[in-house]
Image 1 (spheres, rainbow, N blue to C red):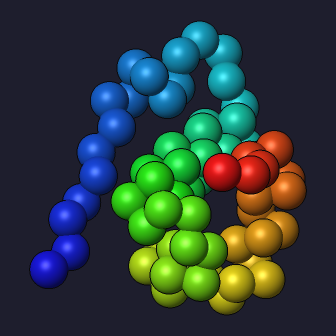
Image 2: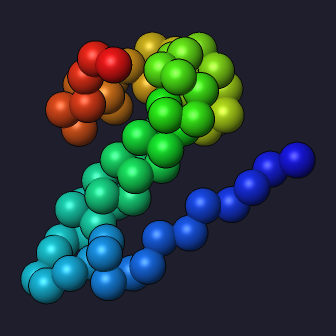
Image 3: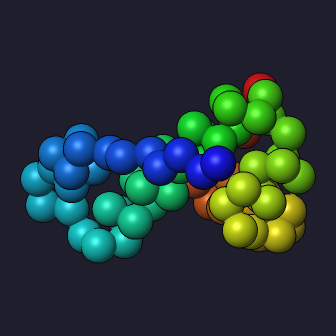
Length: 68
């Protein structure tokens, strides 16, 4: 069973953000939620998010999300 995670747009969009900043904020929240849910098991997180493990690692680096 898949559970959707919703984010209030006011927390994501804020004032004068570019579309890239909004996308980064959404990705960050989704990834952080999945990392906590799966206790930082990157393989499981990547599968849940429909990414390769390598793709997830690139996003973690780009978004500055590191370590447990």
